[in-house]
Image 1 (cartoon, rainbow, N blue to C red):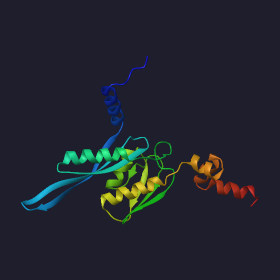
Image 2 (image 1 turned 90 degrees about the vertical axis):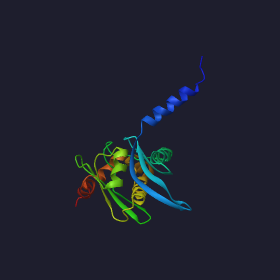
Image 3 (image 1 turned 30 degrees about the vertical axis):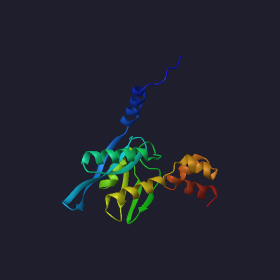
Image 4 (image 1 turned 30 degrees about the horizontal axis):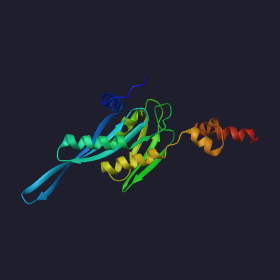
Length: 194
């Protein structure tokens, strides 16, 4: 006989789902509102959340107190998660560029042992994503909001070889072979008798 889940059970499920994510505070900004009696201070937080297995999201929250701003940003990040395909659960499948406003970033896959070579806000995104080897460069704005959004723009363009092969009606081995130091191109040249 199936029993209806009580409120406690539902709360526990939500806690387990939330516990799989880790969050990182990227930037906190103090903002002032000038009112009749003086200045009223508030805080804006930028948080990146991820499960270290290919899912990542970012959120922005504003409140009068720092902990409340961080909590709001974390909730917003969990609502807007992005799944990114990773090669060997370690690096990106291919190089991409992303833009947002004046922010421009270049992301490159890297061989094992490279580590995360990226600055500030981009490093937080890769750590939460679970990437171990990547080379990234920010070429535009150093504003953390623009950098994070540009990084997410680049990550949205990531595709795994299986999806590319299905779209192009080819085998996965054909797509992956092209990636390895041009071996597929050399093999094509020897097949034609050149």
